[in-house]
Length: 429
Image (cartoon, rainbow, N blue to C red; front, side, top):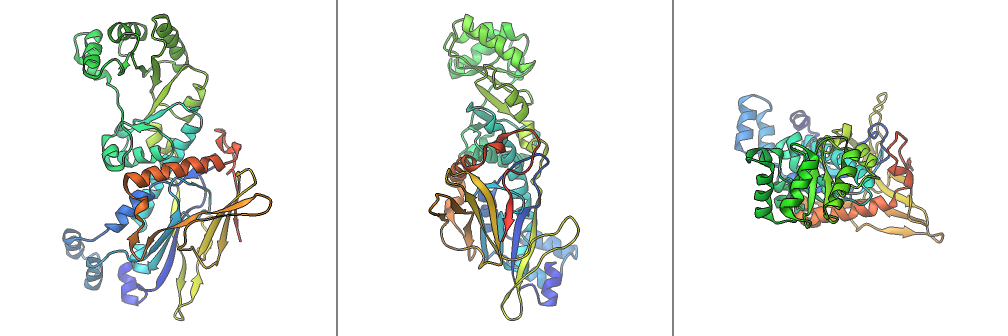
């Protein structure tokens, strides 16, 4: 497209692209925006180097004028978007990219690959957090996804309320708190389960977490308390019928005097199994496969469409697809979330053919009744310069705070796990 647009003379036409989801995964009532901080980093550094240009040339992918354009590529436009961590709904203009056609369209795969995956993980994580009843959750899914996706998943889960990750690179790169426990191989390495427990306690102290189900859970708990004492931090259980096993483990720990020793469970958890453990004496959860695969929805279903461009008179013209089942709403847009007097979200209002998103700071406007509208789009990148607040560990923490605030706005029906409709409507005006 870039190659053909350069030849036709339309490559430098100013355009507005928009990223949005036509629908949510089946049965979901809301989604969570994640990946923005990663994406801004990637866009800022997005370049074509000699190796890529040589390959494009040698394989006749594009013509020399396009190679010259790619060699100088650096995004110089403007980006607005929902705050990372905020809730979104079908039609929400999650990201808006303003620049020349060529510089915007070349970013399509990068933008969608980041937002689709990170938002899928964050949306699943938020559901898990909502049913955990305040008990901590740890992300432990690195072995169930790609090596780079693992870091992204840990970050997205933390934004949505998980407390820690077992992925150390996520801690190094993004400031996500890290944790870990021993695996079954550590127990099997030693001549006995008791030797394994002693080695771990000698290294990390009695506050460590001992994995007690390598052989027999009851015997494992007995040995764990004998080795670490009643001050043992936690035990981890990774198998069995967890409600039954957790109840028996709690009774045994109490009988042994380890009344303050916690119980953490793993074993292929998802939001439904976490909810099923709500009445069980479980103190923490470790979640892997279901989390990093979006709990059945591994991509958020977002698309990236051209919604407006300038004509020969420098006037904005709205454009949109009209194809069956994939129609989009054209035009530059602004967006607000309507809240009632109690601060509960009631509508997502998207204003079409407005002046477009503002470069001003976000705002909340309240009327006499106490109802309000919260502006949803904030400037993320202006004239190619990223707003540094959204980057790195600080940006990740900011996104986590935004998520907590956004979740408090949602109606109570948002947190039902059964299949249902989107919890608030998107209204175009």
